[in-house]
Picture 1 (cartoon, one colour):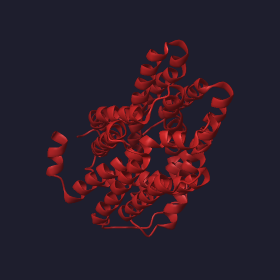
Picture 2 (cartoon, rainbow, N blue to C red):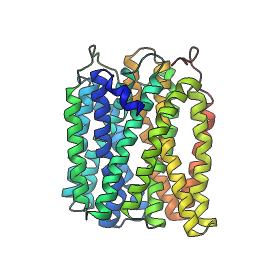
Picture 3 (cartoon, one colour):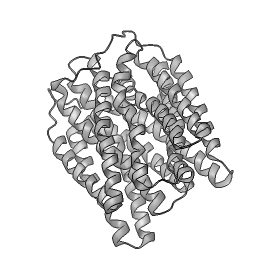
Picture 4 (cartoon, rainbow, N blue to C red):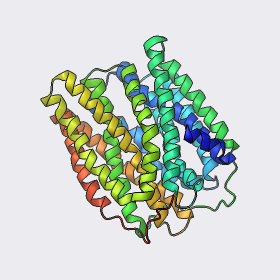
Length: 397
């Protein structure tokens, strides 16, 4: 494969980070792909109870700004390793020490804190390892590797539960091993040569459009993370291996899609990519909402699966927000701080979207949750059209 051939010739730090991206992706892929089935079998939650669970799950996303500020003395690479160890600890406790619902929520918080700490760091480190004018391309390559990790993790779940008699504990153990290994590899990367303390607890008015895009992304992301899989698990009664199969297919598609998306961002610009994503999301949300009501169950299931896969691909457009932030940054130190602030802001609204979505699901039906998604997509479209770069977009590859 061309990507593998390029990595062989790549600098040591890029090879290490590519390996980390693969390994951490496998760990999170396994734990995330089994989570809905795990809580459904262990606690049998209603639609609102499931959405309420997003409060402890997404609260770390809100707190990540403050936790990162407290750990300002750690460079991005060391903080990434710490985040992976937190994720490993949380995953192990969820799988082996969830004696009741309340205890599981505590472990979920620990796991989610590790996962959310890593989110802005992955983009920051990826852009540090990119050539000038090729940040989108580099992020696309790294996201392609993460999609490969999704395939591996989902395939392990699919084969393990389908043919090897896996329990949830088996799957969580493998996830823990992968996350610990990723942390060890991350510690092998050299710290940044110039590590200057970053001011996290300040919102700058010059980045307000980025903050708005992050907020809208948080509400949109929550619909995919919480309600799209829940439709398949609860409305269509799909088992763990079917969910893993969908994540595997999405990962295969993503290997090809991610590098192309990264190049498209560099060539076409963030404005076109983000507005195009919003248009596609309108049709995806309409598919989730209308297909189960107007189509036969079998056909509706396949339509929802297609929507799920498209949704999964579009989730990667978040890299366009990261490259936009890099292009408008007044100074390099602003990048990680602003990306981290974006994670906090988007989670304020994603938690609200989860709770509101759960109330809508219980009161009116799941279809109306995705009609809410249509409204969010329309707002996203008009917000993306406001993107203007301070100078001509770099389009040299």
